[in-house]
Length: 497
Image (cartoon, rainbow, N blue to C red; front, side, top):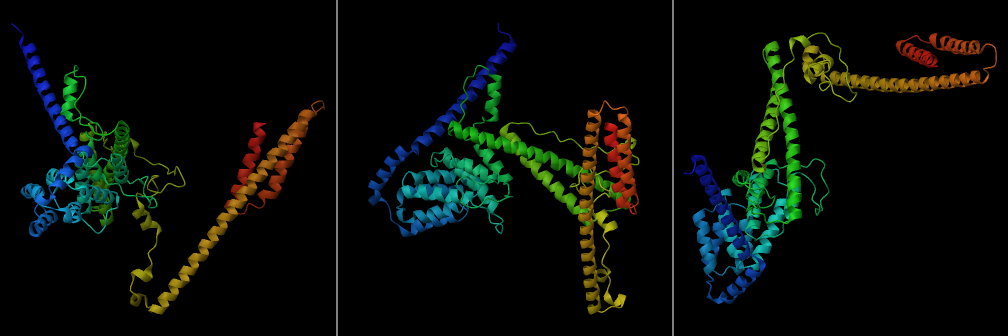
């Protein structure tokens, strides 16, 4: 008698084989649809339809009603009625209107499969329909979204699913277009685009989610999760019935672009999470210290939260479709009491902002409060100051001229400092060269009795020159710093010798 565990393993294997047969049947059905819509089959069906053109009804009323159904939000029952009308009506004169109605994408996303079936019927009968529809969809998908149209993004996502299912049905056959589409969704310039490139083109994250969701198997070659689990449970299963209809080169290119985009998204997600949590903890501290936070800080916190939540939602969707792990989102920890104390601020880079380097203040708002003085002429009523509008304007012009002179003086001082530093550096280098020459000369005259005294006299002479000329001029902080730099540089070179 067989053991219970062996019976269970045998039953599990039978169930797995049955599921594999279901996937194989789906693959056969997809292949049959693509054969029916292939160029050779369509050529025969179009000729047969053209031969029976005289038997078709050229009913203007019904043909107009057919077009009107497609212009409005059509349901599943309306789509089935249109499919039946395609067999009986002569729609040669209405192809352009039908294409425009379908390309307008007034149907819901749930009705995409029905619209694809209707397009298959029209594709098998009218040659002008397919070329016009494909051209319109390609142009619309690669064009930038209109900012004043709130429904443009939703329509584009439906069109992405629509053209993917047209490719799965064999109606649309240009597989390289999807590489251009992915570049467009990622904000990159397409190779065949004639428009100049944009520096900061927007990335359509929701469009990428739609593309990956409906193209992960047929275009990218990622098996469904159930099929991947079956492969893991059945090592004896050599080949998987995956519905991949793209060439190897296109499949690899799409696979590379999608996974690179996901990696970049994960990096942005980790950074957005860190910034949001850091701002959140800072807001909590500000509430404890001040009792409330300003409206500007609350707005910044809300914007950080929305960005983080949007990136998190997109990353989760892509992770599920691509069957990859989500990045670890470490929670920023508060500083312990052991680290609290007096510290000296030191900016690590001159280009770093006060906030990035720690700064003298907590944020830009606090820095502005202490360093930027408000303009009383703008904040206090002129009547309170006893000034007229003309007097206030004259004072503002006088203050603006004063600030301009101060800025100019600061620029001159910076230039003088720069010139002085360059001169000091050049002088120090010259002193170093002279000292090196003196050392070389002393080494050449090593047969003399007291070479050390020559070096000492040369060193004493240079120090005396520096003290006589520079020390007396050190009447302010800048010149004193210059003297100190030259003195230390000279002594440092002597010590190195």
